[in-house]
Image (cartoon, helix red, strand yellow):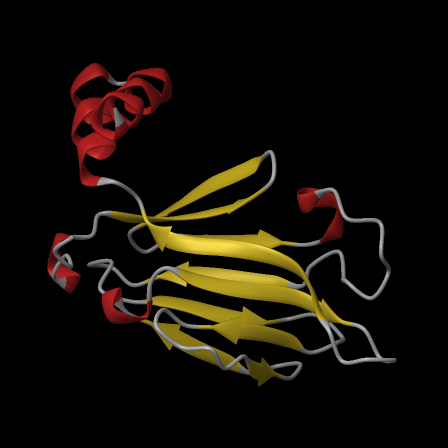
Length: 145
């Protein structure tokens, strides 16, 4: 599959289980345990802030919670720890990426993965043309078939 150039990404998508949200150009999204259906208090109510640049060439992930989060970028086996108050920028080359919202103290295993990726361009075009998220979802399913 060909990589999209950073300029062609119109939005980013974050998903975990049933939860799915898109971050459009110049927008922010605050995620935490209630938003994502996590009861573990090591995950703050506001743990992760995602911010898209105005042209969607970058997605900034900021740890605004108390405990560290981990980030695994595409094509990397390493998980980088991000302490409270720290942030990192992700580009098309880093996607898809996984953000781990907590780490177990006993064995240092990373928990609660959240997937980050660029939103499929077909769903964006179809959704914009039809003016609905349902049309975007149908276009994404049709593109996957």
